[in-house]
Amino acid sequence: MRTAAAIFCLVLLPGCERAKQDMYDQPRYGTFAASPLFADGAAARTPPAGVQARARGDFAGSSSGRRGAAQVEDDLAAERAQDNPYPVDMRLLEKGRERYMIYCMPCHSPAGDGDGLVVRRGFPAPPTFHQDRLRVASDRHVYDVIKNGYGVMVPYGDRIEPHERWAIVAFVRALQLSQHAPVAGLPPSLRARLPAGGQP
Image (cartoon, rainbow, N blue to C red; front, side, top):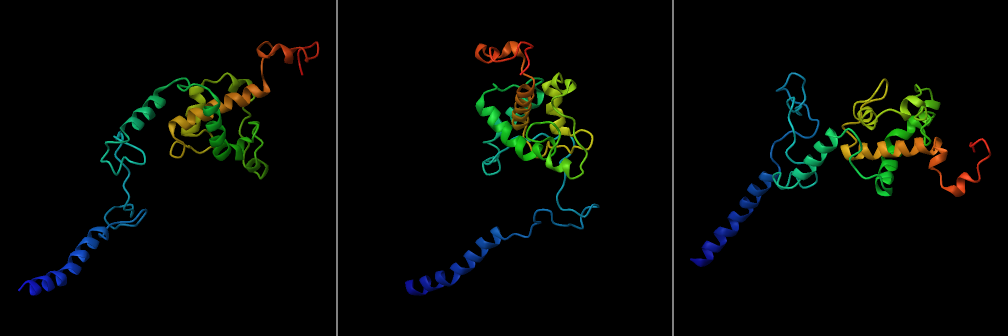
């Protein structure tokens, strides 16, 4: 009797595994799949206006939102800031340089003068960061241009996270300072090497 029961259980086990696989291989839409259910033909739906994420990040989906809430709060604080909310140190500048080289350099050039490789191939030239208008523009203006775009520049709000936008702002300010450093702010050893007119 025990042997028959054991054989019966062994026969049923593959069926259990099949049921387990069905849980993994459910009928569902893949990313960017088409769907006849909606007028635009896409299965992916845009969230309703005003929806705010409760959690974000690598573990937000797997932890039911328990992890990732702090990241959303950080993003909201960065979005509300009018000036750079992060300390401008080498770590922030390095992050800003990295993001700038990926997203900004093709048009704005490594020096920020608007003579990037894309411009040399016919794309409209962006303004140089070294003009007076942009040197006196607020940090928030630069942040908003990165997020929302400006003129022919596309918005990067969906690709560059809020804290990374502020890092780029810090790096742009460093680029501007590299070309227009006030003489009074230079160390005495460098000031002594300048000609009498105060210009290098």
